[in-house]
Image (cartoon, rainbow, N blue to C red; front, side, top):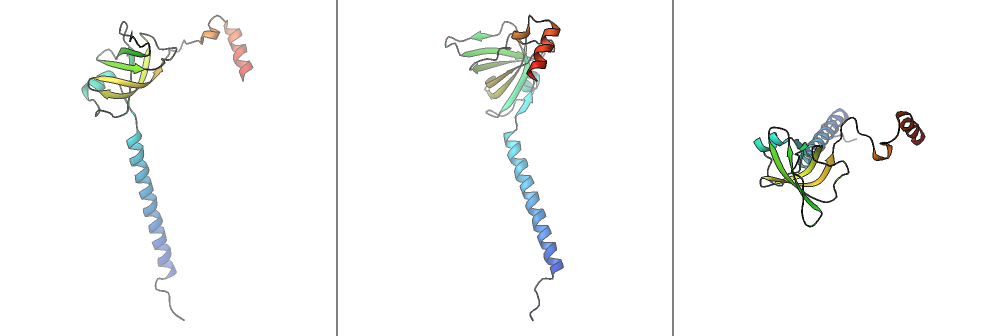
Length: 152
């Protein structure tokens, strides 16, 4: 009867080590893929001080500077400035803006740097804690609670 080349005890050890190596490899691959897809958040002063490399996907957050919103003749492209009180970044966006997007409001623009300006692919308008949807603006608090209760 021939003897096994590797004892069962050692076979299990080799299998455990191979499984561990595969798990570490998969984790490193996942971390690398996520780092390539991560979208970093910047405020204007950070973006001016340490700009990301050209074309890298980032998010720019701040306030839309009053008097900076300009609509181009095509009716779809807008230019505006995002500020944090310390620095300003010019932004260009082509598309439909959110309803809450107005001068003086908060915005998060997703996009990339193109020279010294930011090209946004998506805009997220921020609202304050006193926000009320248009449909509920003229309702009393009791009526609003009733509407909310009906939708649950």
